[in-house]
Amino acid sequence: MKIILGGAMGRLCREIAAEAAAHGDEIVYGMDIAYAGQAMDFPMANSYEQIDCDADVLIDCSRPDGLSELLAFIKAKKLPAVICTTGFTDAELAQIAEVSEELPILRSGNMSLGINVLEHLVAQAARVLGDGYDVEIIERHHRMKVDSPSGTALMLYEAVKKGVNADRTPVHGRHGRNEKRTDTEVGIHAVRGGTVTGEHEVAFYGMGEEIILTHRAENRSLFARGAVRAAAFLASKQPGMYNMSHVVAEMLD
Ligand SMILES: NC(=O)c1ccc[n+]([C@@H]2O[C@H](COP(=O)([O-])OP(=O)(O)OC[C@H]3O[C@@H](n4cnc5c(N)ncnc54)[C@H](O)[C@@H]3O)[C@@H](O)[C@H]2O)c1
Image (tube, rainbow, N blue to C red; front, side):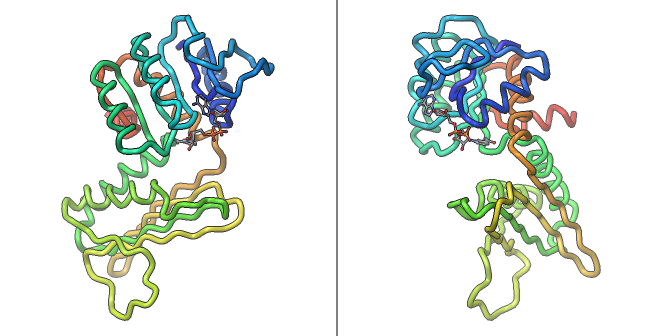
């Protein structure tokens, strides 16, 4: 696969470049607004306008403010794109969706294959266990994380709802509450401290048994592996909007 990297000098792209090399994929060009002649392992530009080469897919790990230039580039080149960048507004997400009518685009706020497998497992467990089990979600992250709960915890909460095929009420902590938990609530709890890369636990508490599904991220390489896997998935797809669930579903088939 020939890959163009957006945000190529950043932490995630550097991991992706290493992962791609390990799989025999080639980074044919990198783009980064901070590029000013630094030594890199592949040709570099600081604007998409300067890039004129063939590729199979673009992987973007930059910032939302580069979106217009990115979309113009992939449209002009008819290039499938994996968008790992997070923090888009609803209007920006709508712009991406519009371009996906012409091109295959995969976007996910969590590129880890493991987390996306966990999402499937949680939906399956919720479907089988149904109403008889109390579900609690606990996520742990490093002390620098500003948002809580994590977007991934909310994604797992949606998987519980999808599995039971009924509405649920998220309860964020139970401080000050003086009543028993209800059957339909899902507790969501955020723990913050130290250097924890990221941990998500979905627990199903039944009468006399507990089923606990846990994912632990040890470093960023899992996102890079997922991004390269997503790029391979996307290269042969029809135009449309995809996410990592589609990649996992294809692997499970
Ligand atoms: N989807 C996932 O699983 C996942 C995982 C980790 C990080 N991320 C997201 O990926 C993005 C990059 O993360 P990172 O840790 O590599 O950040 P980083 O700050 O290390 O790297 C970002 C790079 O993008 C460059 N950049 C900034 N604006 C740009 C623009 N307009 N055009 C081109 N390049 C631009 C910067 O110069 C920098 O080199 C962030 O949005 C982050 O939240 C997603």
